[in-house]
Amino acid sequence: MALVVNGERIEESVIQKEVERLRPRHEEMFEDMNPAERESQLFDWSKENVIERVLIKQESKKNGSKIPTTEVESVLARLKQDKDKDEIYKEFNAENDEKMREAIKSVLCMDYLLKDVCKGLSEPPKDAVLKYYEENKDEFEFGEQVRVAHIVKYVDWQIDETTAYDSIRKAQDELKAGTAFEAVVDKYTDCEDRGGDLGYVARGQMAEEFEDAVFNLGVGEVSDIFRTRFGFHIAKVYDRKPPSIPKVEEVKGQIVATLKEQMREKAFEEFIDQLKSKAKIEEV
Image 1: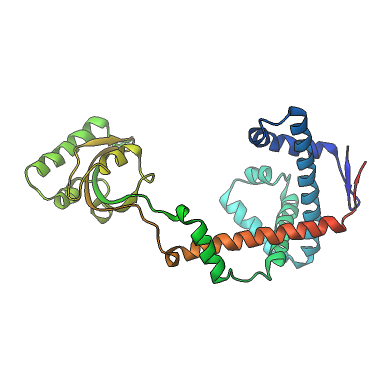
Image 2 (image 1 turned 180 degrees about the vertical axis):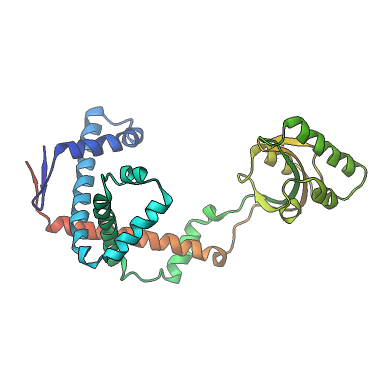
C-alpha cells in the first residue's frame, strides 16, 4: 500500500522502513499486547509518522526563498572543517557537494518553519512556573553532598601501577607523620587544580569506589589509600550537606526552559494537525 500526500507518492517501502525503526521500542512498550494487534498498531503509527514528515517537508519548502545562498555555503564550509568529506556525504545521504547543498537547505527550511510556528509564544507565566515546581519538587532534590579534596596518582600509559602506588604511599607516610593534608596535596597530587579540591559532590557523580570511600568519612577525616579505575587516591572531607530541595528561585531557569520546550512541542503538534486537516491523503 503506497500513499499519495498532496500529490506526492510515498512507496510502502518507506513506511516499512519506519516500522523497523520503531519496532524494538514498540515491542518493548507493548509486549503484553496481542501480537497481531501490536503489529497493526505499529504499522498505523509508522504510517502516521511518515505522513507527518512528508507534510512538514512540503510546508518547509515554502521557506526556500528565505534561505540565502551564503548561509548554505557557510554551513557546508563549517561541516567540511569539522568532518571528513565522505563522512559528511554519508551522514546527509548525499553524493557530492551539490546534493549536500540541497540537504543543508532542506534542514534550514525546517529550522525556519519551526521558528515561524513558535515565534508568537510568550514567556511561561509565574503561576505556571510555581505550579510546575510544586508538582515536581522531587526532581530538583539534591542528594547528600560532601565537599572533598583528594590526592591522586593516575595509573595510565605513562605511569604503571607500582610507581603510582609507591608515590601515594609516600604521601600517606607524610600524613601519618603529621603533615597537613593541604601541604601533601600540593606536593604529590596529579590533580593540581585548586589543590585537589573537588568542591561539593553528590552521590552518582563520581566513580563508585570514590563515593564508597568519601561518603563514609566524617568532616575533617582523611581516608586510607583506595583504588578507582583512574588510579590511587587519598581523600579528605571538609563538609557535608544533607539531602535538600532548592528554592523555586534557584531552579526557575531550568523550569522556564522545560515549560518553553513543552509550549513549542504543543504548538508544533497543533500545526501538524492543521496541515493534516487541509491535506489530501490517499492510499493507493
